Length: 319
Image (tube, rainbow, N blue to C red; front, top):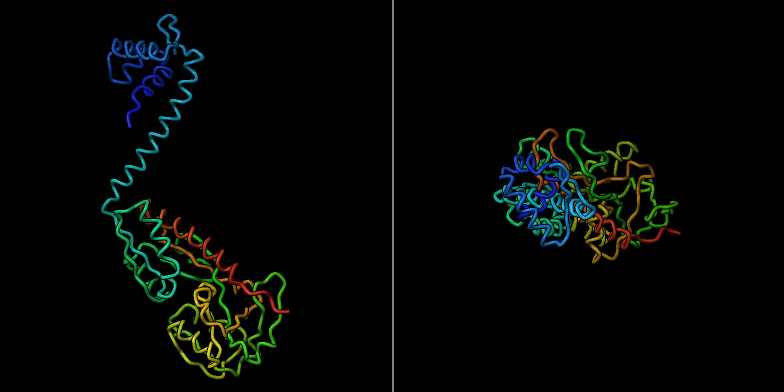
């Protein structure tokens, strides 16, 4: 992108002198003077008044400089973005994400990212939250996607979207009659006190939802009647769908399991602690490439899509 003409005019306007402008532009004064004269002839209007060796802008000159400066700013922006693309041609971005969340969150975000940075190699590491946190600490990943009640203080975090934990019960279970509606909430509420003697189908102890549920049980002084541990959320919800026991699911996961039609979902806490969020975090103080932040932007777009889906799939409150 060559804007030599605009650069020449703006420099003369700044210097007010053809001689000083020529020195700044590293060309001879006669050559610059001839260039400007030819340009004015081409435009059919004078850009400068010559007064005692001073070059003063005419009305046309002011208009030209106003537009030329905008063009030069766009040139700088273009060159900066082009520099990014050239220097990141062999770049790599490593991301850690929970196994169940990855297929719902990443594909659309990665497709958007690739359009902007087609030559960046993206590596995905899937696992439970504790494993992924270790990967980040050991610099085996650059970006951690995780869910929590609060963001990790040792990371720079971007909040992507809310992902409520929900209690899952077969639609014919007698406990459904215990549910009550809450003002402003998209799901009915069911007190876990009524469930303490039930069989709970829970994630394994290393999975983040299990850590959260165990904390809720502890805070409420509830010891479940019996527990079955299953890592796979689809299997666990499949069992709930058959009336085998009670379980817990995340709203985002629930929205991808619409084929399980025999489950009712409930809130099981009535305070703000039940608001779980999905974050994208990276180490503080670490030099992060521009494309990492571009990937986070793509995740934010996907987060808005997931939020919209949650609104569509949310059931009406219980009467």
